[in-house]
Image 1 (spheres, rainbow, N blue to C red):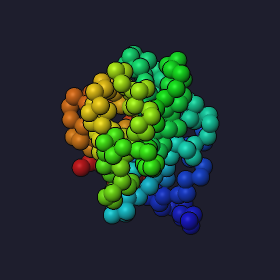
Image 2: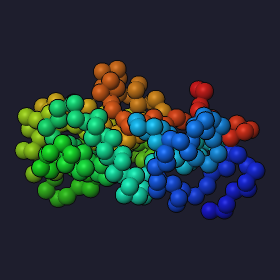
Image 3: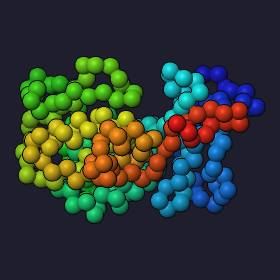
Image 4: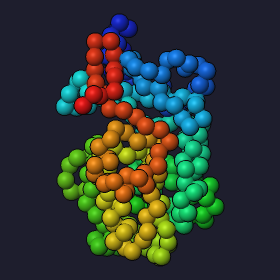
Length: 239
């Protein structure tokens, strides 16, 4: 990817150097507000800052998102985000943590271990030959909009869930479509879902998808706006 010209405030840059360190709040005093160039600084609950790369959306070069790819982050960043997620999880009374693929699996083990659970339960997209279609649901997301993808629960994991209060864990919520289908899958098995826990809440579209009651049970470490390009850089979208 070519390096953008330094005088182009709306350019995007390679993401290799992002998600590698959390910076002290003092380094960002007075610099958190837009316009942003190349990256969006988001404040964590303790005030320290994680800078997210800007990615243009495929259908419009004037619109973009601030991205978090958890399995490309440093251990230090993952550990800090997991600790912040764990603080949000503790009051919820979850008896089992259910990790959503793919990047929710970066955080689910640490959250479950921090809650003193002996293990966690993964959902997956890969169908093994012993799986039961009744323990699956079709899904799509902002990054994988195509049809034909399904979310599966291994039947051998079902006894770990039955009769327990479940907490869904993912890296982010954006459109909310995958989260809603996973939520319905667990509720269809008779589970009480105590909430969805994420590192990043991206935009607001997920609120309409999930509805008022479920949206109130979405817990995130930080919020990330949808972006639009202006002459001086990137700003939160006004529409």
